[in-house]
Image 1 (tube, rainbow, N blue to C red):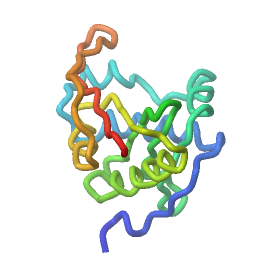
Image 2: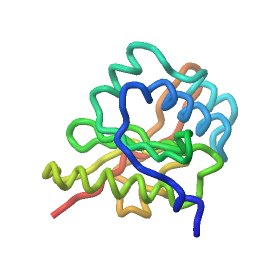
Image 3: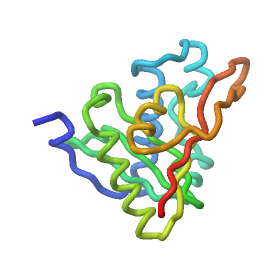
Length: 159
């Protein structure tokens, strides 16, 4: 049995948003990463829990993976088939959790008659999205503070 087999999945509630900010921070700052510490700090300086964070999350469908009382990871679907967030705590990375979260997002998108899903994938997330059938549309560099971070715009088209 793999680690992700003990996970329960549910749709997020506003009461989860503070913890989701902590999951993002944990994933970016403590997980394995091709980004430097300076780049990671520019990306996520601290866990988010402000009004803008709550508003952004409140406009999306968010599937959370829960083990016991803890959120192990989450993925979100925003308007127009955009996968906005995909973060997994370091202790659950490479456990199959990404695939399980993604399968629920894809099912929702198909139920909503989306014709494609797309994402701005970090260097860390790109292999996971590629494994789910996404293709790289273009490579990008974005500036965060005084740091430049590479990422990929990717998409998956449905018939």
